[in-house]
Structure formats: structure tokens, C-alpha cells
Amino acid sequence: MKKIAVNWNTAYDTILLSNNNLNEVLDSREDSWLELSYIVSDIKEQLWGSALNISYNMALLWLKPKLFTAVWNDFIFPKFFEEYVDLSNVYFSKNNKTAKSFITTDSKNSHINAFYLWAIQDSDKVSCNVDEKFDYAIVSSNSVDSMLMKLKDFKRSWSKVLFDPGSQIIQMKKEEIIESFKYADYLIVNKYEFELIKKISELTDSEIIESFDKIIITYWLKWSKIFDNNYFLDEIEWVENQNEIDSTWCWDAYRAGLIYWLSEGYTWKTSARLWSVLASVTAWFIWSQNHTIDSELLEKLYVDTFWENLEK
Image (cartoon, rainbow, N blue to C red; front, side):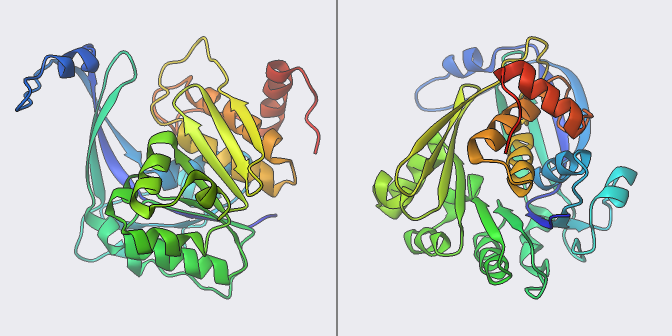
């Protein structure tokens, strides 16, 4: 079985469901100040964090990832994680509570997220034994120092390293962004994040793309584009879901599906298409750890969607 390392955040989420259109609320603002007021129709609390979402989706496909994250001793992992995810490298903070986010989402799947880091600030204490070899490792949104440390650690352990800096891009300096490129094989960002990297690093599109074996740029509920260092492009369409309930966090399923199928020896295009199907399945349910699927069903959905057999 392939060994996969997942280094990301873990949090408690409070989800505020609003019937309002948040875009309309924002459009009513004054030029010099902002005041929002709207009715919340429901409140839900979830265990969340991209690390959990990615690990959950991998575990559904019978791949047992090792989780690298930081929480407080108030955090209780569900039994599914205790059984199907390797939790031996989880760090339990002595001083900081588990991170928490407050998310408002509306009927249009817009969302406003306020995130308090707490235990994530201790992510530099999450140990990584560089003598342990991983086939793939994904490193993402933690403190800048921690992300750089983990990129170096996993690269030294001969992993294929996928870097997803997310919201931490705005905290990174030019030198830190350029340094991170040395230790990552693949970069995954959305279009806005890619533009931020260009602005902060002062690099061109081609200079960034040529720094990686592959770059994946996602476009919200439209498609993804995959570039290699020769600027070859694959476009991966978003799989429409007529029964879509919540697409807010299906991008974590995207990452899980991509890494899983790459580890099984499939091409980037096929893996990304499977990734898109898995994300669509996730959107059938509210939140990102409430769906179930196995590789057999996923393969059937792939054939039904793309009208071709799944081949390596």
C-alpha cells in the first residue's frame, strides 16, 4: 500500500446558514465602512479542517494516510479516523485550544470565513521522521515557518511533495515563496492565489510554471487547468451535480482524489477527472465528511460521466 502524508489544519467549525444572498448584502455597503446584518436560519457544528477532509476521502478509498496536524486535548477524533487514519504524528498542544472557524454560507454557496488559529500556531511542533519514506505528501496552510519546514522534511524523505499554501500566501515574503519552490514537486492553487504568488514573488507565469513538475490551478465550479514545466495544458471540467446541496468544501475531496489515483499509477488527467467526480459526490451532502463511496462506485461514476473506461 502506498504511504501518504497529510499535513494541514484541523478545527472545530461553527456553520451559520443564512437564507440571504451575501453578495446583495455586500453590495449595499457604503464606500468608507462596512456593516452586515442578516438572519441566520440554522447553526451547525462540525469537526473540520482540510487535513481531516482529505484524510477522510483517502480512507474511504482504502488508503490509510498519516495525519500531521496540531489540536488541543479537547479534540476527539471520530472512530472512523482512529481506525482508518494513522494518528501517531498528531501533536496535542499544551497551551492552545483546537483551532476554530466561524463560517457563514448562503443559498448561493457563498461563504464568509473567520478563522482563529489557536493550536495551528503549534504546527511547527508536529514531528516528521525524515527516515520514514512517503510516496506522496501534501503540505498546506499552517504557519509559514512550519510549511517551509515540512516541505524540506518530506522532500528529504523522498516524497513527491504537493504544496497547497492556500490563505497563507498573503503571509509569505518573496524569498519564502521562492524558497518553497525548491522543495515542492507540485503546486495546487486557485486562480486568485496564483495571481497573489505572481505579485509577491515578482515572477512571470512561465517562471512559476517552470519551477514545478506540475501546477494545478482551480477555477471555482468551472474547471481545473494542469500545466507541466513545458507549459503543456490539460483542462479538467467540473462534474455537474443535479442534486448538489453543498459545494463549499468539496475542493478537499479534489486533492484527496488526485493524490490517491496518482499513487495508483493513473495519469494526471485521469486522476484529476476522478478527483472531479469525487468532489461532485461530496457535494451531494452537507459538509465534507458525510458521504460514503468506494473505488468501485467511483469508477462506475467515472465511466458514466466521461463515456470511457478507466485505464492507466
